[in-house]
Image 1 (spheres, rainbow, N blue to C red):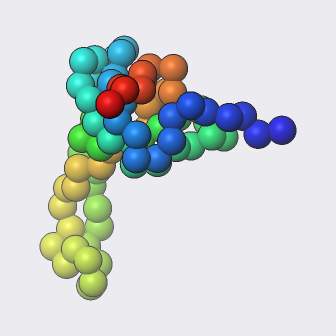
Image 2 (image 1 turned 120 degrees about the vertical axis):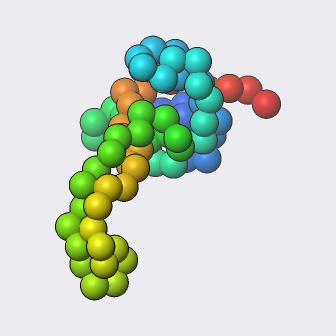
Length: 78
């Protein structure tokens, strides 16, 4: 049986624990298998990317949102 979450994609949530405590943002993705969510502009990590012909011909660094445990976020009403 799948676990039901009260937080859905598109909801506004507040980070209640961790490095980004106090920030609010929109949920971009819910990961039910790992009990995590990805929040826009929160827990951003620099990721190195190899050069490729289409998207990034020079390679370098990109900023990527990393998953946060669902217990560390709270839904903001309104």
